[in-house]
Image 1 (cartoon, helix red, strand yellow):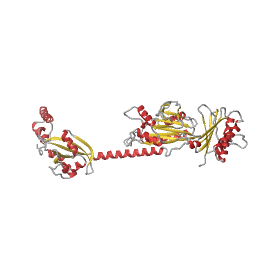
Image 2: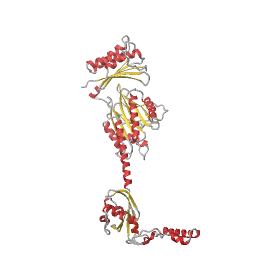
Image 3: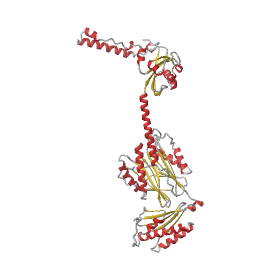
Image 4: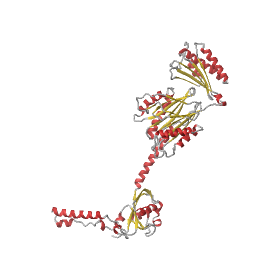
Length: 548
């Protein structure tokens, strides 16, 4: 068999094994005696051996595309009928760059050089050809002459049509892209579109979804102003990917906002969230850190459900890590969470983040947190500038394999003229009923020194009178009055040792009491009450300052 001096033959061992098989079958049939010799001759159909089949006839009938090139410039020796149908007639003897321009267009000629040099077959999967169909190309080295002993070498190009597979894969990728876009849209719509702006904190946050190859997770953050100058900050991460994780995240975030209005300690908020997470999906867990900032206390009170530690850089540049206490993630049940605290005075910066910022497959998690501490120690500027710098220092790119949520908050140190807009004054309420007139006189003097308009001055004194009278009648010592002003509002707060929270109720015409809270709720912009950590309660109200 000679095909333009190129041969495609079975290995010698396979030919000998095929010959032995034919001999054994013939001998078995004769020895059995089941079929007479004459009958056997009639039933025998002469089938040519593989070595006797014309190569051109075989290759021309192969549905795959076949081309044979030889020499260093890959001169075309042969193309089969399927190749001609796909790309038309091709001139033999010409270099492949002119004879097979379609192979040059899809970048296959360098692969022919590689196969010719190495003598090893190579395959490229699913390349789209100029005819609009996709092929998987296998390039195999061949040698001139019989038995592999010739002098010339070439490459047999075998192209299998995989258009159906490629289109199915593209449809699958398109479906995954649509699902990811849906999850990203849902995720972003459930995150706060604009962060609330507390009087005493400056806050910025960033959310970055994972790259195109990673499904969207359930990272979230939120800022909730509690009233009375206090602010709740929350960050969390729902385990899992896709729309389901984003939906669970949305439910948890909504629940956090609802529970925060109760103004409970952080660990009690996590207890409520833990039970809710089990009701939403028993197989879904989430980490969460919930913190409350009170400018009067100069610290951040927090609780953590399996979340990464909050980092705080003080005004001197020292970074502190809020490691303990930390409980298990939400949705595990059976754990009593506890609250801790970390200093956050004027001039301090705190960072809350999810694991996508610090966790890497090739390094320990503590190393990532330590790197974030170093980056925070050297980061200055506004919260947004610091937020962007921390993301860059962590090496987060558009192709990152996990979601990233970061929230940076600063407690500015108010000095100079700005400091006049942030003032505090407090009075211990000692004695009995005589404490009420002392409180009114104290409030009047303070509000006058703060140069409030007459109307706001009178409303403030009235609120002090009602809250102090309510505390004297229903509370227990120790009692304290606190006045605070910011650049936006006046806050009046009275604390005492009784933990019974007041409520607004309708007083009947004959009632001698029960109107104090109703009056405060009517004249103030907002009011509320909460239990204090050491036992007792705080009742507060606030007035929005006139602009200018």
